[in-house]
Amino acid sequence: MPNFEDREEATERKSERENELALKVIARRNKLLGIWAAGHMGLIGEDAACYAMSTVEAGATDGDDKAIVRKVCDDLVARGFPIVERDIRQQLQVFSAKARTECLRDAGCDE
Image (cartoon, rainbow, N blue to C red; front, side, top):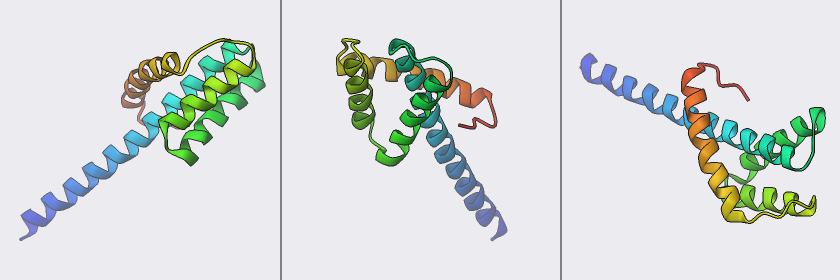
């Protein structure tokens, strides 16, 4: 039954691509959130890039949106930018949509 096996393999490949895309979208979203937060903290250049990457890494290790929201909120408040977690969650949603669009547009979607 080569036809059934071909369909099964195609389904597996599609599932792998979708999982890979989901991970790339999350990484891109977290990076966008980190860049946004860095700007509010007054970080520029290398410092802003490092902060954005720390946000990506926090998402990769925790795998939990709550942890990322808490981290960014705590960092912003510590730098004198008053914000609540709800506002950061809203930004996360905005960046999630933007990241998905960018990742679908860019075949590489490297972070």
